[in-house]
Structures are given as structure tokens and as C-alpha cells.
Image (cartoon, rainbow, N blue to C red; front, side, top):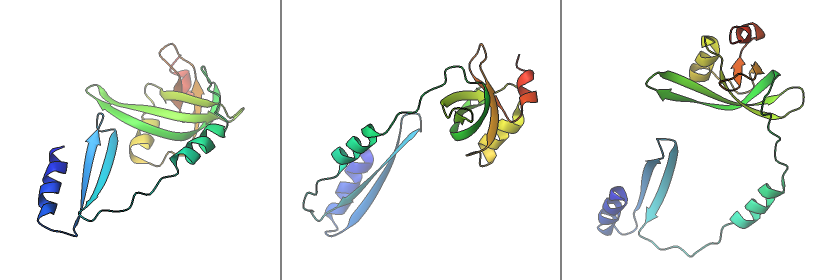
Length: 147
């Protein structure tokens, strides 16, 4: 709010000017941008209702609660904690295209390195359920160590 208030104050002295304010939210997991102007614009309706209807009409991917086998990475994130980085993978099983959620298997530093420094989208992985959650690895040999 302070940035917006300062932007308004600064713009009052400059008619016709534009300013941008960026902000972080969540635990630095969300970002917002506001573009401000001293020149009023005519209200223009957005198409969010039509977009929402279109998105809601699309099929929802079935989730695999205990995925096993080969898969590919659709998206990912790495959460940094005091105990070290934690990889979180969203992927699809090759066998039936169900969506999965998994973490890199303990000791699979190659997969964690790929998540942190590479481009893992589309990468092939092996997944299997584990008592501490679904685990993923770049090869089935690495998953054997998790057992």
C-alpha cells in the first residue's frame, strides 16, 4: 500500500504520467502489477466470464494417488528450506496420462539439480509411491534405493 500511496502522490505533480507498481505476495510465491495513470479511461468490460466458462468446460485431468512407472514432468517448483531444497514435481504418467505429484527420491541429486538449474519440462522420470509420498527419479535404479 505504501508504494501505491507514493505513486499517487508523485503522479499528482505530473499530469498525463504513468507509473507501475510491482508487489510480492504469499511467501514470495505470488506477484502482482498495477499500472497507474493520471488520465481516466472509459471502463471496458473484460471477458473473464467467457474465459471461466471455457475453462470449466474442459475435462479435468484424473489424478494418480499412487503413481508408478514412467512419466514426464509437466511443471515443477523448488522450495528452499532450512534443511535444503525440496523439489515438487507435477507430471503425467506415460501409461494412462493421469496427473501426478511427487518429490525427487532421496539421494537423486541429478533430478534435484535438473529442477534447480536445468530445463526439466518434458523430462522423462520414473515414479513410485512411498510411505513418505510419491517419489520420482531420473532412472528406475535410483528408485530402488528408496525402498
